[in-house]
Length: 572
Image (spheres, rainbow, N blue to C red):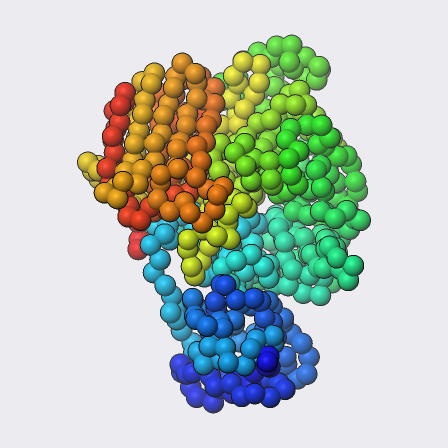
C-alpha cells in the first residue's frame, strides 16, 4: 500500500512530524520552522515530494524517502512558500509503514544532523549536503570568486538539477550560499556560465525537461542578478536559443574584444557550435567545430574557449605557416576545452582540449585531426571550465573531481563529490605542438604550514626528482599508492589498485599514466583525505585521482629523489 502523508506541524522549534493516512498532506509550519528535514535511504526507490500553495503546485522533486532505515537528512526549505497561502507538502509513492513518516522533523537548524564524514576533504570545495557535479557559472566580481555547480539538494545521487552556489575570497575557504537557480516550467537547471554586462551578472544555462515520447528537450535560457550573483531573475523571454538536437547544452558566452561582440560556444552531440550576439538574447550561428578532431568516444560537454599566452614562445615552424599569421601574433593562441564522457584516457569522463586560432566566427585547430590532448591524466578530473573575469589576466579553472563510471557509488554518504584545487593555465611548446600548462593556483602557497617528517591527511609533498623516481604513500593497514617518474620514457604513473576501498566499482582500481613532455625536476603532490593531485612544478603534467584509505597515509618512501612535506593549514 502506498500513501500520501499528512504532516501537520504545530509546535515551535525542532519537532517530530506525525503522518496520517489520508488523501493529502497538510503542513502548517510556524514562522521559525524554516526547514522540513526529509529522511533519506539511498537504496530506496524514488518517491515524489510536492509543495502546494493555495492549490497551486510550486515544486516537485524526486526523493529517496527512507523506508527501512535513515541514511541521512536533506532539507526542504519552506521559507520561499511561507506566508503565501495554505501550504501543503505531499509525499507520494512511498509505502504507509515507511520509517520516513516517523522521522520527519521541522526546525530552524541549518546544520541539523550534519554528519562528520571521514572522506570529506579539508581544503577542497564540497557541498554541505547533497550531490554535486559540473562547476557552472564561475565568475570573479568585486574580490569574490563565485562558484555555481550542478546540485541535487534532495539526495547525494544525481537528479533534481539545481544550481548550487558557493563564494570565496581565496579559492580555498568556501561559504555555502544555497540554491541560486531552481527548476521551473522549462525544466531542470543544467550546466552553463555567467558573464558581466554593465555590472549585472548574467547567467546563461541549459533548461532540460523530459518529453512524453522519451528523451529530453534542452534549451538555452538566461537570468539576471543585480546583487552580485546571490539571487537571479529569469528572463521572461526564455528560451533564447533552441535546437532539435538531443544533446544541446552547456552554454559558455564571453565578450570577444576582437569583434566587439559576444561569442557563445556550446555542446551539440559530438561537436561544438559557435554563435555571436550583441545583447546575449538574439544569437547568430557562426560555425561548428569537432568533426574528425580529437576523441569521439562519448558525448562532448562543458566547452570553454579563451586566449592564452605561450610561456616558452619560439619562432613558428612549418606547423604554423598554414595560418598566414604574423610571427608577433603567435605567442598567443586560443584554447577550446571539450569535456567528454565516456572516452577518457583510462575510461569514463575526462577533459580534452584543442589549440588553434579563433576569429570570432570560426575556430581552427592547429594540430592534425587525430591528435588528442588531455588536460589531466587522472581518472577524476572532469567538466573543467574557467572563471570569467579573473584578476590579472589569469585563466583559473576548477574541475569536478570524480568520474561518471562510479560517481554515484563512491563511499561518502551525506554529500558526494568535490572540486579539484584551483589551477592556472598557460601554454608551452614541445616539439611541433603547443600544449596547455597546468599549475596549482598561487593561493595554494598560502596554505603551506610547517615542515613535517610524515604525510598527514592534508598535506603538500614536494619531491625533487631524478631520472627514475618511485614514491610510495602507505598506512599501517597496508594500503598504498605508488607513483613513478621515468625520465627516460618521459612518463609519470600512479597506481591506486591497493589504495584502500576499491570495491564499490570495477572501474575504480587502476593505474594511470601521463606523458611529461620533457624532464620533470620537481613534483608537487596535494593530499586531502580522499584525493591525490600530482603536478609537474613547471606545469607540463597533471594527474588527479580519488583514493579512499581506511586511515590516512602516514608513511612515505622515496627512491631516487628528495622529499619535503608541508602541513596544510585548514579550518576544520
